Amino acid sequence: MRRQLFGVLLALAAGGAVAAQPAVGRALFDGRTTAGWRGFKLPAFPDRGWKVADGWITHLKTGENGQGGGDIITIDSFDNFDLSFEWKVAPGANSGVKYLVSEDRPGKSAVAHEYQVIDDERHPDAKVGPHRATAALYDAIPAPANKPIKPAGEINAGRIVVNGNHVEHWLNGVKVIEYELGSPALMAAKAKSKFKDEPLWGRKIKGHILLQDHGDQVAFRNIRIRELPATAGTRQ
Image (tube, one colour):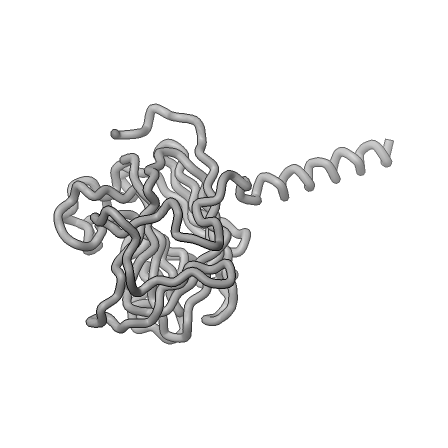
């Protein structure tokens, strides 16, 4: 009986570990080319600012007023998904992975939900508060102080899950924030953020995945996505 009980507990523990891991899905970046990506509001991939080498897609440092290539987005758009990616930032760098990205909004930069990617120790924006630090929903929902982050120059693993109106941010295998699109709590956070006047921010829309050009050096690899079944919580 003890042996059977131990087997059940072991199986439950293994099942929990598997559930915490992102699904493999399909590759959004093949590690060799820019296939599947283009510039934000552009028909093709930028001819400067980004490079592909050694399995990484890297934005080169240009400075905030430099001539970078701009943000890049997936050609495909997604509704419900489980996205995983590895990233590393240079010391003092700032970037982000945005989702629910629409090109219908005005302006050259994408207003969307953002998984913050930044050097928490050195970049001044991260010093503003935890709502602008790594893995936060940028400027809205803070990531906890005890999150399992690795320093600039080392590889971190990010994950974003959007399932209906439910959203999760993960960092190095640990869920650090979760929220509900359209909820009173998210709308209250929005009212205190720079997105307070953006009508669709905080609502569920089908959109692209975006890698941000913030003028700093940041690299991404193993970008994979698993599309989840359709739900009733999507605005097309």
